[in-house]
Amino acid sequence: MNLEIQHIIYLIASVTFIMGLKMLSNAKTARNGNLLAAAGMIAAIITAIFFHEGEVKPIIYGLIFGAIALGTVVGWLTAKKVQMTKMPELVSLFNGMGGACAALIGLVEFHHNVGDPTSIGIILAGMIIGSVSFSGSMIAWAKLNGTLKNAIRLPKYNILNTVILIGLVLYAVYIVWSGTASEMHLYLLFAAAIVYGILFVIPIGGADMPVVISLLNSFTGLAAAFGGFLYGNQVMLTGGILVGSAGTLLTLVMCKAMNRPLFNVIFGAFGEGAAVASSGGPQGNIKEVGPSDLAVQLNYSKKVIIVPGYGLAVAQAQHTIKELETILEERGVDVSYAIHPVAGRMPGHMNVLLAESNVDYDKLKEMEDVNPEFTQTDVVLVVGANDVVNPAAKTDPSSPIYGMPILDVENAKTCIVNKRSMNAGYAGIENELFFRDKTSMLFGDAKKVLTELVTELKALD
Amino acid sequence: MNELIQFFTTNKEMIFIVILMIFVGVEVIGKVPAVLHTPLMSGANAIHGVVIVGAILLMLNAEPDNYLSLILGTIAVFLGTLNVVGGFVVTDRMLEMFKKKK
Image (cartoon, rainbow over all chains, first blue to last red; front, side, top):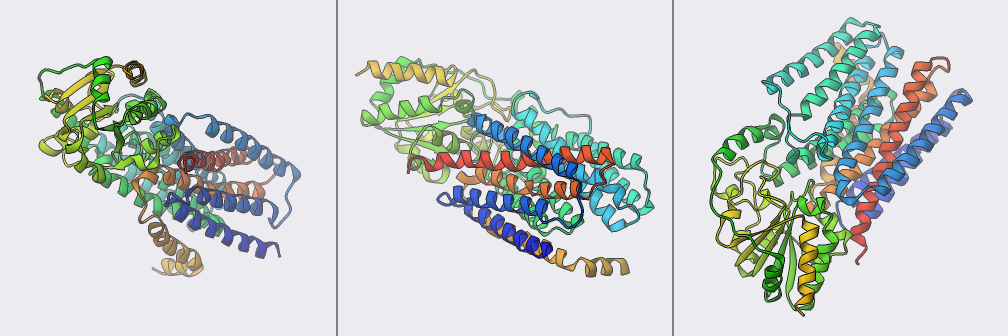
């Protein structure tokens, strides 16, 4: 009887995963979709524990409940406490935990299945993918939170990585083929997979991390699915494959938004192109503007568009920008936000951030809708964004971001760019927009200068 | 060749699930707006936390005197829980913000 109940609940859980994911792709139903999938997950976990066939020692139950309790507390607190700006690296961190979990399953189950080549093959595949996902996610996490600043490239890293990958696969095939029971081979393979995950992500630039995280996310899904195959467990299989395929598609969609083939992201055409571009970057004079002058200018504008970027997130200036918006609206200025699909560190990152400070959903405009509006705009205020407004993407075929769709801020009457310094953007390339006649620079930390701007605006009344 | 056919025969239900799920996964998020990419990725991240079920099965099948297995298994359950709980809570926090102003 237990087995039947198990199957029914696993089926229901699988359906909640599918429905949940479906609902997540629509703004109205998204939150309920997430809760639905969570409910399905809880049901699946409870079923796995309580409808198990066979004798189990109490100590094992103790360990399971202890681990779940501790994991729940730690996971809950971390997720509740994290700042909205740190969201992307947290997703990467949790993804890595799932990968590590899959890898550990492989490590433990190996010796139970010696002599059964099919199971060993499945175990090794799950372990390799899980390990790569784990170490890769940790590197992505370190890159996003700033611990690892630069892309580290070993000489001939593409060839090196490919060789290691082929070596990994051959080694795994050898272990399956030889039917060895030696755990030494297993741990060597595990270590090699961890190293490969590190080498896989470390040469990729920070700007591409969202794509990498999405890719590793689908890897973990795949690793979970291999676990499902091993245990003959349908809910792991459906959940894992679902995320594997949806995650792959999402990765491709993100690449498309940046106009960069996935191949280029992984094999890093970005960095090499950037080195060339920055040496021959545009030169010229820049104009600076202070908060008081800008306040006057904004006060007498009819239409202002704000272009938020990662700098806004770093400075935690989302509430200040909302304050600015409110004051300008009171003065009869039409204010909206132009959201580039890859603004920030993740697609949708800016939307989440601005939603946090109660910016009206209708004021957030997507790139295609807002681009024609720039010609009728008096002032564009670019806050901490760079590459997404770089005209080189349209004009300079040698630029590494050539072909990426950008926000046409250059069409506006004036363009104010808030940056901390003249340093190049995340892609590491110069931006000729800053040297244009219509452009003025507003240097300083976004939160600080925006607060000054708000004060100046209030004084104008 | 014989091995392949045998593998297919013994695992045919599983293989059916895999193939169908690939299409379902692609179909389900086919028309997602860019705004929702981050929450969707995060939600998918939480769903693959289902790997915790594997960790639990590992523990339930483990020999009580194999301490290495028990230690690794307990860590696996802990990590899986982090993935599940953290994943769903973070996604909910993101989506909470979209909802607030309506």
